[in-house]
Structure formats: C-alpha cells, structure tokens
Length: 529
Image (cartoon, rainbow, N blue to C red):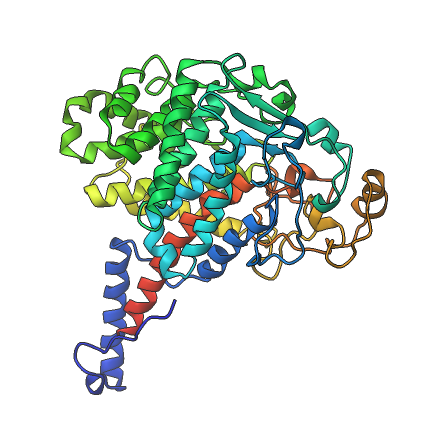
C-alpha cells in the first residue's frame, strides 16, 4: 500500500545536518517511537505483512473443490469433484477440501468461513487498504455458496462428501479422484446441532460481510443461518453420532452447546434481534458459556470466541441489564487470554523453549493462529474501552492492550520465521519454508502439465515416497508446525507437522491485516520526520 510522504511540520529547510541538530533529530525520533508504542504502532517490522496477507488468501484457491472460475490464480489446480452429490440426487459441487486430502468436512469448513468473516468484520478496512478485499470476499463466498447448496431444506444439511477411510487409501490429485464421493446429511432423525450451529454462525457472519457489497446475497445467507440455528436448537444431538464416518477425523469432543451459543451470538451480531442475545444470556450457565474456562479455541471448541464476543457487548449501554452475565463471560474470556500470556496460576498454555504456544502434538499451529486472532481482537477492545486485562497468577498485574498485542505479534513472527529453525511455517513466505507439505495435489505433477491418469497406489509408489520437494507450492498454507522442543522435520509422511488446514490460515488473515496497518503507520510517522 502506497503512502504519501508527509512534509516536516517545520519545513524541510529547517532540518540542519549540524551535530546539534542531529542530536535534536535523534531526540525527536526517540520521542516519536515512545509515542508510537503507546498508540499501538510498532517499530518498522522485518516482516512483510502485505506479502503474508496476500499469500494467506491465495491458499484458499488451492483448496477449492468444484469447477474453478476464470480468475483462478493457483494455476496448478483444475476442476474436481464435479459429480459430488450426484449419487444422492443433490448438487454438492464446490466448497473446500479441508487439508491435504479430498474429503469435504462440514464442521471445519464452516469454522474456516466464520473466522475469515470475523477477520473481515474486524479488519475489513485494513484488508481493503492492502488491495485484498475482493480476494477475501471470494474466499468466503466459495464456502457460503457451498453451504447454500448443502442446506437443501430447513431441517436438512449435508455434512460431508467422501469419507476419510477410503480417501486415505489413495494418494491422488483431486482431478483424478476415484475414491467414494458418498454424501452424508443431518436431519430431524439424525441431528447435528454442532454442525448446524457452526454453519449458522458462518452464514450469519458472512451476511455481515456482504451487507454493503451484495445485500441480496447477505439477506439470503441470513435466512439460511436463521433456519439452520432453529433446526440445530430444536433437534439436538452431536453430528458425529449421526454421521459415524466422521468420528476418526472431526469428532465433536466439546459437544454441541458451544456451537449453539456461537450461532446465537453471531445471529445477534447480524440481526440485532434480542431473541438471540437472550438465548446467549439464558443458556450461559447450562450450556457452559460462563462455566467452562478453556485454554484452546478451535474448529471444535468455541467457548473462548463466544466469551470474547460477549465481553465486547459490555461497551454498549443497551446491554446494561445483562451486565452480570456478560461480566461472567468476560471473566472466562480473560482466563483464556491470561493462560496464553502465562499469567494464570495453574492453567497456562504450554510453550516451546522459544516461546510458541503449544497445545498438542498434532497440527499445533491451528491453536497458535486462533490465539493470535483472539488476542489481537481483545487488544483492540481494551484500547478502545481504555481498560486493562486482569490476570490472577502469582504477582500478576494489570496487562495493558499493548502487551496483549505484542504477544500476539510474537506468535505471528515465530510463524513467519523468527524461530530456532529459521523457517517460515507459512508456505511460500520468505526464503525458507516447508517444501514437502503433506498434500496430495501439491506433491504430484500438476494435472495441467500431465493429464495422464494417476491411480491410488501409483500416487503412493511414484510420488508420496519421493524425497524431492513437492512440484507445486501450496502458497499461504500454515502447516502443523514444530514439536514441543521447536524441532521440525520437513517430510511428506510427517503429517502431524507438515499437513496444513484451511482453519489454520483463516484466523491469520485478519491478524496480518492489523499488523500491516501498524507497520504502515510506523513508516508514515518516520517519513514525516
């Protein structure tokens, strides 16, 4: 983003090169940096956040299923999954592959779209300023178009296309798929409140995003969101009890209560209808909203996100009647944030020796990116409301918004290369990044270069076991990342560390945009002196 250089307030001719004036200039710069820090402006960064933002959005084009559009930028991909749903007599073409395989899982896909939308709601101006607004809209709409297709009647939502067991027997490009594309649904007799609630959240959040640019589409999304929420609330049950094939891949360990609160919260934000707020307030205790103090935020566990959204409602006078419950939501939100900051007594998130948040061995970066997003959003809330974060660890003092943001930035900087391996875990960013991502399409020669059919075992025999780097780069993918000791092995079969998922990258879009804004403000201030 290009910025106009500001003239010095005293006029350029008044800045002398004499030693005395040089000292004065240094003093002015020192004062400037002190002031800028208190205004959320960091020193000029060594990281190219504009590039990271652009590449993070490009990643979603690598993950597209269906008929690719004319403006597809990821050239090594082609059309795939064009008969999805045909067996069941429904059009389920489109949507996203969640990771390095070719199943379309509804729950992580919906969470991905919710997080992309939330990032745009919070940081849309910054994303637009970077010239990436249209790409962000396209990333969201590719998901919501699919959800509209999947929601074939008020109480029917198609939950999954393909199954993980069959898919994992094959190592094929999506364009060559020979695996089962059987589709699975939830309905009145086979409920899935968690999936319905998360999809409602995604469509409600997206309806806010499209409100100005495409009001008709926004209204359509909101209509679907309301129907899905009602369906999920009326016919309660976990979706993995109805769709058995998902249990080994995306089991709903947290249950469905968090997703129903999450869906209601997003519908309240989208509609300003008090019935949704009342749902969040009245079910706060029985659904765990003010009971669970959680130290992760993920495609499965939504409590921290709900709690932070509820906390932000405290800024508005009209929510005063619910202040008692909202304050309890805020207490749990701050427990999560303080656990990330290592300022709780007994329930902090572990860290690697180099300071990366570490939740679990498999695909740990998903928890880092969601934490960075929530920390960034809450830092903005603290700054705008002139408040501090209050932690309860031994010797913990009030934490200001800048400290919260600085920690979020430290996690992003680790992702982008400031780590013991000197590796960017965002693929395609920087000079060193994973070259053997566990990703079927990326690890096999592009269909556009070689249209010869590659079968299930042929992919394993000829491509999977190769030690060479992948022929195609999954730009913008955030891989699983290092182990608890900051070690990382760039091997295709090391799927716990080298597989990337859509919900890893999605929360970073907003964070990159925020950090880019701060970087541009810092440069502008320096240029003015």
